[in-house]
Image 1 (cartoon, rainbow, N blue to C red):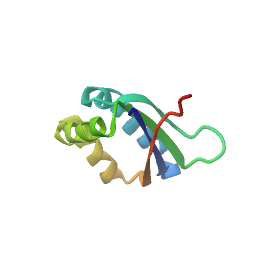
Image 2: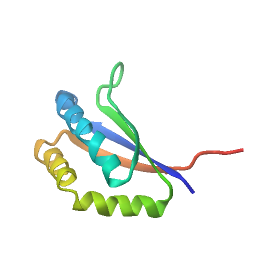
Image 3: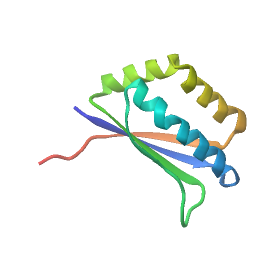
Image 4: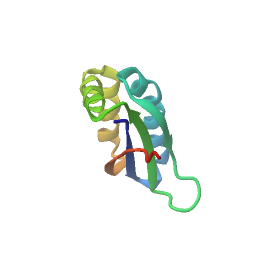
Length: 102
């Protein structure tokens, strides 16, 4: 069953540029590791500290395999380290969704 991972980020509103840089790095890393990246979405109007990402997978097992490849990817690990060092992500929530079909 295909799934989409919906990631909700609470970001430091004074470090939005750093989060955008972090997001742009994932644009190449995620597909290389097996995720179908729908996109990252930055605050534009209104709330200035919430961002989102959506990534689809063929199954939960495909997601688990992707996570293993991501942990072995040097650019992916460097991007995680970048986020930890600069502390622009304050909280992160993952929700696993499935598409409603008729």
